[in-house]
Length: 144
Image (tube, one colour):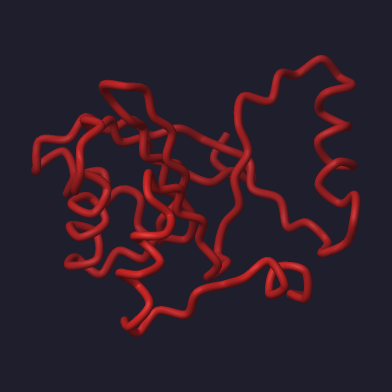
């Protein structure tokens, strides 16, 4: 059924080594493919970069041409109210029906979390760059 309200998600399988996420996002950026949301999960050897982009078919083709293993899946995207308990209420509907939620991540926000091995070093490296670092206070105050 083509009128299903789903979003196409790309799962890109990458080696867990420095620069691989940057390589994938660079390929897409150079091709004017806009990333609307992403998630990275990893093990010791490999990672999965999950992406929602504005041109999923083109992104899929570009990444495969560059030798990446890419899978495309239908996922559900929900516009949540920015209020306490908004996410919990939606997830509860699915969970109470016995449908397993495999993972959840957010889209479109310009706030991005980066977990690094050395937080202090990364903060130092970013400190004099044109990057706005976000504090916990910023997170507490944000209203979309």
